[in-house]
Image 1 (tube, rainbow, N blue to C red):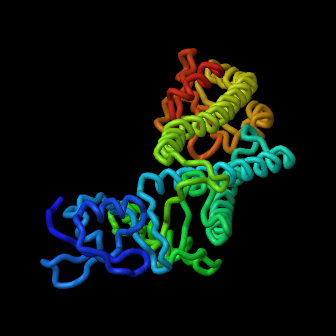
Image 2 (cartoon, rainbow, N blue to C red):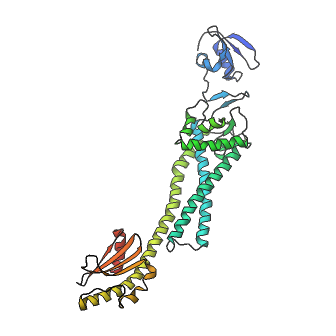
Image 3 (tube, rainbow, N blue to C red):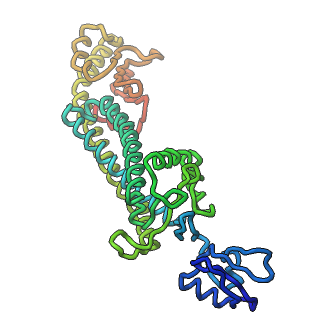
Length: 373
């Protein structure tokens, strides 16, 4: 603090002084002066704002505070609080959209009689459609949610309301629908900039993100809720961030992984059951080939009378069946194909033993070989 004598302009635009710096400090602390109130001393060429000489006057002026054109002194929302509000809104919107789409998809799945075991392609198409439907629904919900609430009397999303924040024009007024829509659409640029547009709120003078600059808006702090209760923003922000970043992702992952593992297990059980049934149908083919080799050392083929009727029960379960001689012409062979990626082959060399091989995922199909051998 300095020993200089100061002059200042009070709220009634009256010049006062000379006065010691302590007098101005006391007036500021009583709310009689603001950060933009004018002060002067003999060393200054002209009247200047109090904020420019806060250190010399021993006054701690918050850098996040300012006076808008309408004369209202405000405090800009800091990045930590805005981030918590963002996380709050993201989880609210995403979980709501996800539950709606999941409910619709489940209703379609069961009412249409789909089955992950019997109709994997139809189930996969349903899953892809559900993903795109979720993206569209989330986009529509997010736009409606933010535009409506930010242009309403509450001036902010539920996340901002919980953190005691509200959105205004750069003059401190309420947003109209057009400005709220511009702000929301501009937020896409903040996303596309690898979220650098959002990080700008941590460094800019008025704590504005990129979309605030484009829409000429501000995010300000309120000291109380609409019911006049004080808000502990730091505590609420910490709770939201801990729950949103650590707790909810774990719960959401568990909610998806448990059903996924359930369906995978059910599908594998269905495949095993199908292969057990197939085992009883392959064995007669193997016996017929073994008998023929024992008689004249020749293999049987698909069109041979002994084999043809034995293939009929297998055809609905497969995409292709080959019975004949192997490529190296050293063994009789049965090749059963389910699809492009799954093929089992059985070779008989004439020594009494059948060997099994798989063209894809041998560890997985080893069980099938054992079932049929």
